[in-house]
Image (cartoon, rainbow, N blue to C red; front, side, top):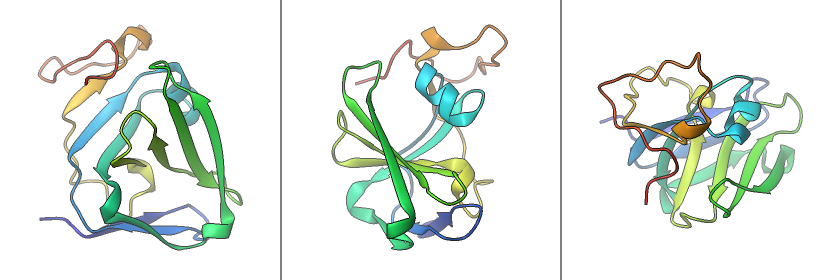
Length: 139
């Protein structure tokens, strides 16, 4: 068991923790995540919202909200000082929180469960043939 686990931004201004293990670890290839990740895909650990909390630096957080490809609002939070992408609030999944794996203190234990929004994947993206692939968000 890896819960609880913690993470934060590069400069240390923002810290968070999750009391629960991820229900999924997905690699998202939507165009918005390509922008946010600086390439693709965005590696996202999905946890129950009730298990997640920001424990330091709430005033440092900045957010950016857009309608995702699903049509539902996605609010992405990042550190206002160093710009590290941290987590997302997903209108389409109000009971879940999406944590950017790169912001975790130790993401090495994560194992991808699926690829999502593969219809937007770049031709050079590697999609592991052993994992499920969804042209858009499952559900």
